[in-house]
Length: 369
Length: 260
Image (tube, rainbow over all chains, first blue to last red; front, side):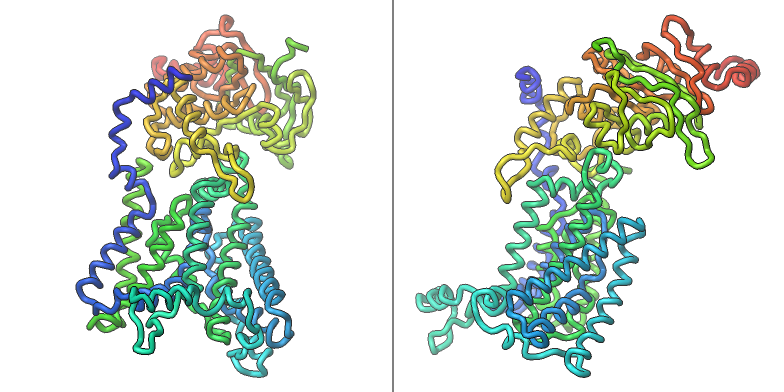
């Protein structure tokens, strides 16, 4: 044992695994480079106010909601599957939450649990169909994209008597610690204190211009950190990589591939329910069009973050950065003199670059030709 | 029974509907020997090893491990009984690191739930040690398996099976896609595994590779055992002829000037 360790330790070639090679091996490298590029671009062209505390919050708010979906989508993509139904699931989960609170008058705790449980169960159905039939998840979840969207429209009309918008949800949820976790701003006292001590900008009245951190941003950061830890440090993480890398090899090695994939489908659906809860609690209403096209944006953020479409490779931190890039580009253009309709052009370009970069990196990493 | 063979099958039969894949195959594998399973395409090699590995359940016949009859319901059962199978292409995941592959499905953990995590420090150390022991220098256990050569990948897969306590190794054509140097690396390692007292079933249709490391040769043809031969009892040419059903190849070999 000690001799072999000595051989390994004294191998002079070890040093050649340089910092560059190590960086190349990280899937989120592309996202880091992309973020630097985007920050540089807006640093040159955007109004200074984009880089103030207020500007950062404005960029991060939409990034957070997309990011929660993107991190979950990234885990699922690494596990080798897609879920195109998450956008519609945001609307459908919003309907369930709203219905429980406004129509059934359930307390918020119960309504939240019902919503998460329903979403997870529907995710499990997605997963079971994909695993049992061996059909591509792309097509199975595409079907559910339409099913959930349609059910949201029909359900909302039924719940409201003809409207596709359900209001008064936040009032029905009431105040308290638990609803507070999903709505409003966090760290308000801290920001007030910082304003009082002249550390951040304040209005003439003494109130800080930025009152606190939207809770969705905290959920986003926490979710990305937990997902990264699970992926990189736990057995479940290794199983996710294995299930997506080669399901057969994983199964032969004793990895419970079906359970891993089903759990991931449940996670993406539950993350959509979380986003729905955040949106509903902050706007007080739900709408049948909530989450429209979010499934594609989440996949785009995950791909910009280094996920391969073929599975088995990617990172949660990458998806986190991908979502921030997304937020910066979508909001940032309003800080420049460019027409903000350039957004989609910019986005498509980023996506194409990311895919090309990822496939190049993959060949480097694996020595594939 | 200390002298019971590690694996013994008697008149094993496996049918898929009306197709008879195995029609009475018998063979034994003892400790510290390499049994080569030879046969042309369609002879039933794959069905036989999948039956041994617990993927298929035999339709008839006896399957004994250490002298006791067994009925595996899944590959996991076979693995728990010490029978590990290394499939030709399905052993490793190229995008994952050597360590992650080595411990796939059996990761060592530390800490208590919910902060239980993979003990990567010892996983990396064990991987490097086990690889060094078989003469493969894994410079960096973080490197993706895809960067290893085909022979190295097979060796990692075999080393993994040995490390996790396999008594019998079933190797499904480990050399068929490899070059000369790579093949000799794998054959050398098979020899090493045998000297440690494991039983090895080496499936191949390359008689030369078989003859280098094999102690005994079981030839399959059309789902039956044609016979089992000790190395001292049979020459390469005879084996070759048996494998191909004899006559035809002999004629062809004559026509081509003895090059097949």
